[in-house]
Length: 259
Image 1 (cartoon, rainbow, N blue to C red):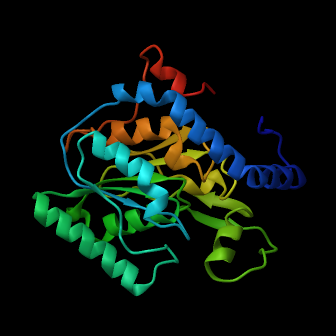
Image 2: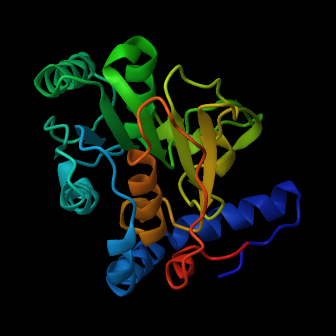
């Protein structure tokens, strides 16, 4: 499927609908690509072992992050899920539970924790880094709509978190988020069928970046290119972070579609 590039409200809405309708099918494609490309992932960078927390997206649980957590465990990182059940939004027990988890891991391992968050989980990760930067080594967000937005004049119907996500498919203007005080990588996709990819952007700087992939929103945690990016980011030495560079090794670069 080729994403049209021409502008206009009607065309944009048709593209949005097409991407949304094909999300489940494209997530399955990502799973197939992972199975086919898994042998190449053995060449992924490995860094200093340190604790990693993987946070799920909205309405998802630790089951949804099992693949990426197992993958990071094989790379030698002590990796845990959030163990807070299904993600139904930033309730007080969730906010307190995440901070307690990060604090405990930092104390146990004697250093800050890396956070990998999918969708809403990435927003949580950034908030943790804003409030407790001494506990967070870096944040890698996957399809996380954390940027400031101006919605179109007619807001979508719905309530609560559902409406908030619907509004992220009806964006008039986007203001990229300010960088964090810790290294941060936002992985986004123009093929995202759940949120407008522009809402996943931050201002780029010495320790902040945006990295594009071709994954669907639901397939972010299964896409081999995304897994490589996460491994590469976690392998960055503490205090010597550098922007992501797509691999040039023959074979591995096939995980990263051109354009």
